[in-house]
Image 1: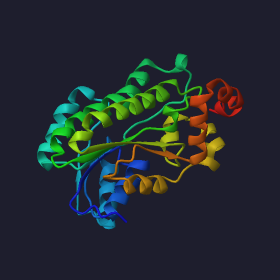
Image 2: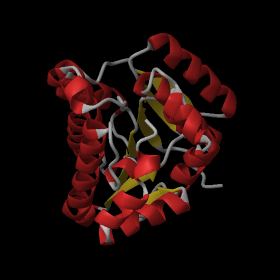
Image 3: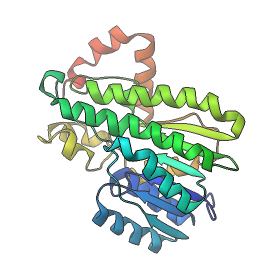
Image 4: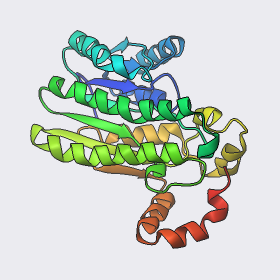
Length: 261
């Protein structure tokens, strides 16, 4: 198990789901954690668990990443306090499974703000503080490779994360800073409570859902490596590759499954 003693790791969206699982996995390896999410109560719960699991230290800094105009000031305040950061995990994000015409304008803006703009601004903010190299890990999605109906905004956001990650990787490699995109399929978290309030989609894909602990372990295992991407599960990644080669065929063959939302 990779030792993270002495490493400062900033994880957004760490109050629950995959973010909490990544925080706990990093805690088991002795990291110094900086945890950010909207819900301070849940952040405190995560921090307590991380201390029990062996984190060297835990700093919680609640913030609503939808408030994009204040992110640079917020990030500077956090980074001035910590002095440096070794790894940034841009995990915060949410989706909403609706047709575009049924999606409120404010939800469209919020999805792009949290999933894309906040991720970009935080990545920019940490670069001067990665003094001896570092790693930016962006939690994207298989939806960023293979779009499906009723997820046009979410898929667009994750496409943006992948494009950003691929470009940034080349920009900062000479600074010994790595960039990895994590592209999971459905994960068994409360993500779907917001994305699909009917519960139909979560029920239909439950047998395919990934464990957040498994995704978290695979994510933490690649810290400080030059791994470009993590793609889970394997069969879904194969479908994404097939889509890049023969999109029309995949859309025809997958139509029934794609419309389960």
